[in-house]
Image (cartoon, helix red, strand yellow):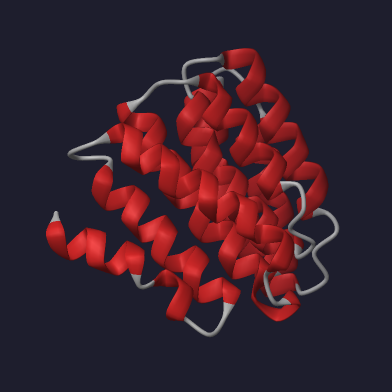
Length: 168
C-alpha cells in the first residue's frame, strides 16, 4: 500500500499525460482488490485527464481506462461504470479498437440481454466500416462468441461467419 501511495504521489513528475492515465488505470485495477473507494478515485482522475492526453495516445489511454473500469465494475456493480465505459469507447475513432473496447464493456452487461443486443448491433455495424479484409474478418470472428452467448437461436453467428469467410 505504501508503494502504491508513492506511485500515486509521483504522478505529477511524469512527463506525458498518457503515462499518468496508464498508471492511474493500473492503480485502479490493483486497488480494486483492497479498496474500491481509492480505485474509484484513481479512475475518475484518469478520466479527467483524457481531455489533455496526447492525440497519438488517446486510443491507448481510452482502452486502458475501459479495462480498469471493467475491473472496478467486477467489484462494485455500479451501472454508472458501464455508462462511463461506453461513453469513453464511443470516442475511439479506429473501428477495430472501438469494437475491442465494446467487447470489454460487453462483459459488464452480459446479464442485460436488451443492452447486449444493442451493443452487438453496434459492433456489427461498425465492423462493416473496417477497410482491411484481414482486420474485418478477425473482428467479426471475435464478435461471434458474444452473439452465441446472447441468443442461441439467432442466425447472426452464421451470417458473421459467412461474412468473415468471404473476406479470406
